[in-house]
Length: 170
Image (cartoon, rainbow, N blue to C red; front, top):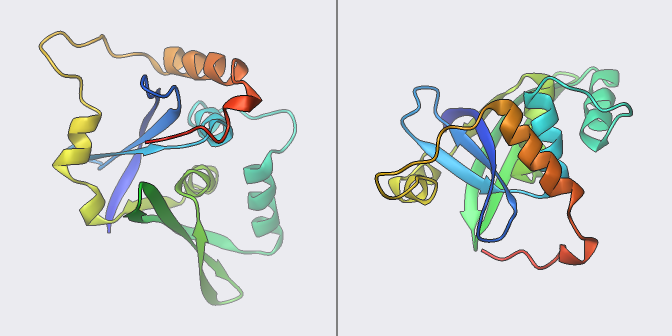
């Protein structure tokens, strides 16, 4: 496992779905993971240091863990099967270590909310995946600020049509 951090959130121009981009701390390797709009919103709000007025699902889970005196030790993005990423959340509770199967997007949101470290399997951090997220050609768009990315994601989420759910394809 290799430690990674959230580099940014972006919108996949082909299917208009959010993508969270994880990166090794030295910036040498990246891992894009396509996620759902609610999870993208939770991650974007946490990265921006903002809170919703009422607790959302990830906030609720973190509150329950705190109430049970449990601690999220780490999150692992551990596998990719048939275009689906798999993750595990490692929790310490009552002297026991629990490893819980979870979606990567939920895992990342919970890791950010609990300040837990995020890791990715070495084989997921390949040059091939890195090429997917790099802009081709000599003219690259200027880097967006965090505020611009957050605004783009907010507009995307506001314009979602419930009929679009279930049509996501790789």
